[in-house]
Image (cartoon, rainbow, N blue to C red; front, top):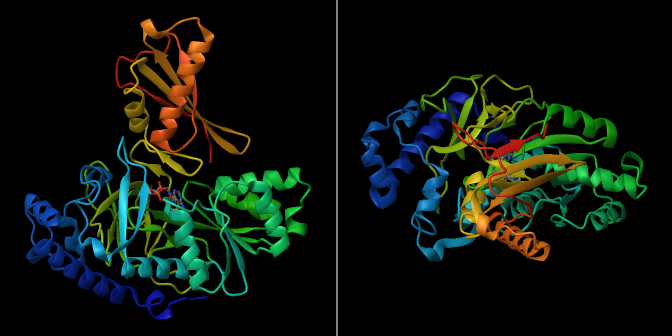
Length: 432
Ligand code: DLL
């Protein structure tokens, strides 16, 4: 039931002492040896001498996704290139992606965190687990892969796509667990039905680690009732490493790996720290990361911290479900999309006018994103072939920047709504 019982059941006050020691060492090292962090701390008027308790974490400056972008690709790395063994890449807020680097130890801690997650979801050597998170630049596939291998499960690295084949393999190999986005599980279930597969009867897959996008208790219930699956929430961000921590069998929040990271909840407007059970923005400090330590990283995810003892025996605090974000990031079919990226891509196309609208909906079990784009008057014509060519070009450019296929609808000049106050560029009718 525990992967690392000494750490996972360590009394909370001892865990906090450990976190303080790790934090102090990290801050000392970064202040002394790294230009970026040294300057940041100086600007905030704080030195390692000001950090004398865990509460003093709040004196340290925040870090943002924008920092990664501004320092792209490698200005925030804190080890020489020959110590970096892996990169992953995630969406940035506009043109540039965010790059995350790992040393061998960083990968080991990431794998350790996932080994704890898989174990707490009851996955071990007797399981065959299908990893249907994307493999490659996205952290989901490879992150989950190494964690599952670490606990001795048999891994089937299917990645995303090719749904029918995934279902055939599930049947042939007796897959018992799956790690994927909740929307992919819905999609698999629908496809299974179409193929005449009765999930409960014909498949052995009854455990799932779901994450990378929001999902709800009612979806959990549906997976239980319709597929016989016990689903566990798996949370993480690429800036921390990737998928990281999961619920225990009590399913009342995902347990943080407290020795590896420090989680605070703040008021997103004032930056003030909030107490347990108060909802705010989650801020994460990675205590052990070598290649790219993140101090007080503003995840923008809204949740709360629960420090009550858990019936499973784990002592580290847990976070509630992510209830939303304090910025405008959308997650479309598991891929992060910022409206600013859409704007950035559109505004580089000379024929595009200055109004656009992003419409997100759920059709069947898949997210759909349609971008309505006003065209410049001199580019707008009733030559349908020309218009189709322009539309294809805009779709191609958006795919290049967003890594996701988007439908484009060309609009006549002046036809989209104008706003007197803050422009509204997104409508999202999905319900989780
Ligand atoms: O989505 C890492 C991941 C992979 C997590 C696989 C879980 C499973 P990013 O692409 O950087 O990393 O996206 C991180 O996704 O800030 C949240 O807004 C959202 N997110 C991740 N997990 C959950 C979850 C990966 N369980 C962003 N519930 C985060 C709700 C989630 N939102």
